[in-house]
Length: 333
Image 1: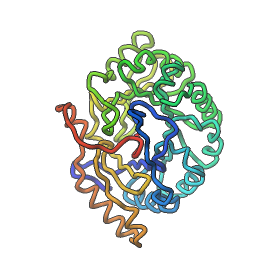
Image 2: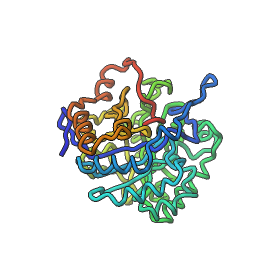
Image 3: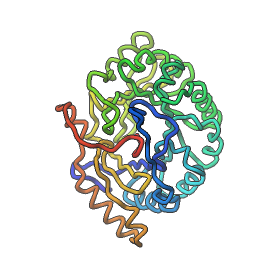
Image 4: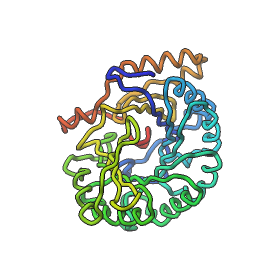
């Protein structure tokens, strides 16, 4: 097992397949002051064959779970073909996709046939006015909810992720909890994080997991559950008398750096050892220059062995930390 300088194993790989997104969520890709985004050219992106080659190498080093992210991964043409290719990797136990859900109704059947195990859908409100304001492009929640329903019909396990920000969508906590409790779908609440440097993050805009827990449990009592595996980021609960779960991801109020087992691979083939990193290590250039698998293994090992990232723990003691960080739309959540 490959471990870092703090004895954390490498078990999970997040692969961004595109930096493009069809939303402009205010906490991720806000359109401000006429800002436009310059996306990568097709030639800069890893091909499916390059992704699979690297995935095989990461699995040989201990990775057991792969999640495809973006941007919005369903914008990558023939994403189901990539999933089918990844499913052939011996030793890989789980493949999932994180999506905003807008294209999920269209692609759920293809994802299921390709062998996807589960999807995580980002949805920050039920109310259309609130949701439209958040996604920045006027999309209503109905299309996302229909995508979720279709994924469930296809037999795909679904978790819904809600980023909660004071003054943005805190009024939606209970409506979201009620809706997904009735549906029997796991809903996870994520504290508003200072990922990247363009979302205007402020500590006083963070609604903590404890605040959210208290809001929900007053109406719908919760009981704790044991965590499923090392490195699980969400603290798990369920509604008393049901099997429906709620999770709380508390990277601001209760950082979980000590158990972080995740490495991130950008769409242009750079590895990042933390969601809050500023720089990545280029693998794709070496691949295209003829690097052998052993060359790539040695490169990955050298990066992971010296990994000491624990940004959230450090930031928790000093909320005035500055500096350039990779944007979430580039590396995925």
